[in-house]
Length: 109
Image (tube, rainbow, N blue to C red; front, side, top):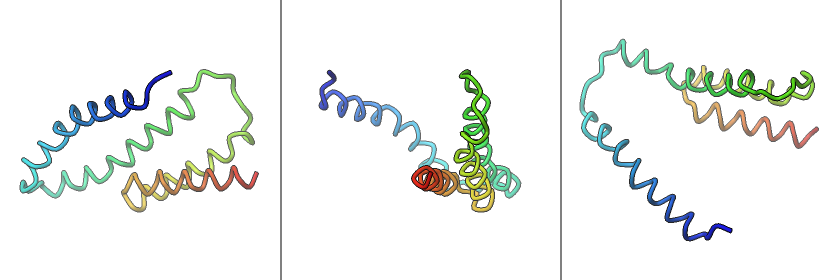
């Protein structure tokens, strides 16, 4: 059995290794002015990431195919999440509300 202190140490170590790598470019480029065309292009990055995640869910499975009715909660929540992500351009809102809808549907079923 893995000790809780080992898990906390591993998480802290991963944080110390990955956080500076993410923080340094942000701090250095914080005042840089990005051209408008690049800003518009970057607005679609969350939607593309989300589409990649959904593709893995639906196409990447090597399991036996299941019926559409079994996948209906996932389909409904994913479609709603994609619409929310497209509308808000925010991956967090899309994933959060999509997950909440999925949980709500599963509780009702």
